[in-house]
Every structure is written in C-alpha cells, then in structure tokens.
Image (cartoon, rainbow, N blue to C red; front, side, top):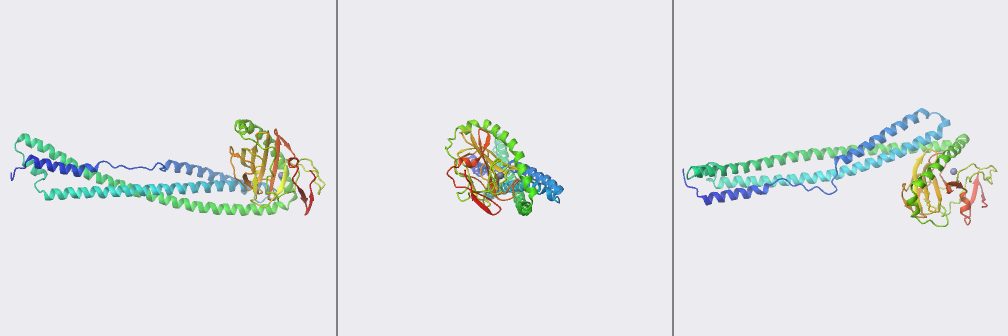
Length: 412
Ligand SMILES: [Zn+2]
C-alpha cells in the first residue's frame, strides 16, 4: 500500500465522477406537435393504389370501344373519368411529397440532436478519462488498496462497483446513441428516396393527364360534326334527368336543416358574366325560333368560352358536386325558398357538397364534360323539385337565341 487515501479525497473523487456522469441521463427527443407518421403516408399510398386500379379499369373499358366511332360520347366520358382519377392521384402524390418533406425535416432534426448528444457524451467520457489519468491514484485498484480495514474495503468495493457501473453506463449510452444515429440516417435516406420516387410518379401522372386531355379535345372535334352523336347526347341527358330529380329531392330532405339557415334572395342572378346572354337550346318543348323545332330539354344551354366563371344564382347550400357521364361535372345548389339551381358540363367545379354559397359566388367553370359537344353552361331551375323554364326567372334580362350562324332576340 503506497499511501493512505483519506476518505474526504475519496468522496471528492466520487463526487467528481458523479458530476461527470449524471448529465448523461437518457436521451430526450422533443417531437414537433405536427409530427408526420408513416401511417399517414401509408394511408395516402393506399388511396393512390385505389385510384391506380380505377384508372386501369377505365383504360380497359376505353380500349374495348376505342375503334367504334358511334361510341365517341362514351369514350369521352371514360376519358373524363380517367382525367378526374388522374387529377385526384396527382393531388394525392403531391400530398405524399409534402409529407415526405416534413418527415425529412423531422428526421434531420432528430439526427442533428442525436449527433449533438453523442458529441457531448463523448466529451464527458474524455473528461472522465483525463481526470482518471491526472489523479492516477484514483483508479479502481488504488481505492481498494487504500482501504483501512476489511469494513472499509467492503465500503470501497461498493463504491468502485458504482463507479464501474457509471463508466459502463456512459459507454452504453454512447453506443445507444450511435445506434440511434445509424437508424436515423437510414430512415432519412429511405424518406428521401421515396420522395424522389413520388416526384417521378407525379411527372408520369401529369404526362398521362396531358395525353388524356388531348384525346378528349380530339373527340370533341369529332363528335361536334356527328349529328347522331349530338342526338345521343341529348337523349342521354334526358334519361339522366329523372333519376336526378329524385336524387335532388332526397338530398334536399337530408340537408333541410342546413338549407333553412341560408336566407335566399327573392330573384336569381344570371349564372354567367352578363355578356354571355345568347342561348343555343331552350327549355322543354319550347319552339326554337330559328330551327322551328321544339326542344326537348331539361334546362337552357348558354354557350361561353372554356373556363368562364359560373356564379351561384342565389345563396344556398351545395347539395351535389360530382361527375356524371351525362351531366359531366355538375353542381346543384338548393335554396331555402324551395327552389334549386343546377349547373352542368363544367370543366371543373369550385365547390363541394355541403358548402354554403352566397349569390354570385363562383361555383365552377364552363366546360364541355359529359354528354356535351361544345363549351356551354347547361342551367336548370327547379321549384319544389319540378323543372321550370329558367328564362322566365330573368324577366329583365335581354336574351338572344342562335342557331346555324343566325342570332335573334328571345321573347320571354
Ligand atoms: Zn343542355
């Protein structure tokens, strides 16, 4: 035994060691409140897979009739459904890309935190080793050898054991952090490569969309010259109208409470910018002043250029906003005075079912989706569920009607 190590010095040694060891308490990771979970991304991926199979199914149906010119309208409808599925998939993929971005930020933060903690622990460990080196006598053995008697030896033995435990816990902590860093890095790489894959998928879907839109344009060109296709379009609309009447009544009943909270104006606002005031097709059996033929029509047709704003004719509640192979993209707004308005063949819709809209609010954009052969708004008014002639509700509006290059004033 070289030298008696007094108890005070031993205690100081132990305290120094404890001071070095204690800050190494477990790793605390603060997750941001909006933390992205893999489950969220998986949910989106499942939805995307559904849309993929929908698109494949539509593609098959389309392939079966693609060479049949008499089925041009059907082809158009299938393509439009593909377009809306493709658009939904693009939205989904964009949501995935955003979520991956958040996940990457989160992982980078966690990684930086783990690396900082590892650095701190390693520094503490080095300090501890340096201390042991400087105070050569405060080695495990020197503490044991410095025991005064057997009781003191037991005391010291327990102290040494504790010190060894602490040393081990530092090493374990550093090893655990290194493992954590390895895992964080791997997860970060995975998120980055999946985000890249999603971006590639988005590009492919956008190319699909462009191609589908070009195909629809070509079909519209083709259909507009075919008399039988024009008649087929008219017949399809008529057939869909009865089912539509019942559905509108059902939804109005279902959403009656919400509809009753919206005060409707006494008059209707023209559903397009005021200069689009020439009709191509009139309501019901009304004789077309130029063609001399009765129309057989559920509403009025107002031609306007693609993507012209369509306005809610009165304040109300959107009871339908969907796509239908006859009406294309269409919206129904129900008003609290027992009337409802329907807007069809939209290029795209700007409202969803359940939205409350005010008079004049943009609810969609003019297009030629569904059984339609050119850009126009097909507009219907119902009073207590029965279709009425819309022009009668615009007594002060100057309206024209046209056919075959001729335009005349419409008496109403
Ligand atoms: Zn129409």
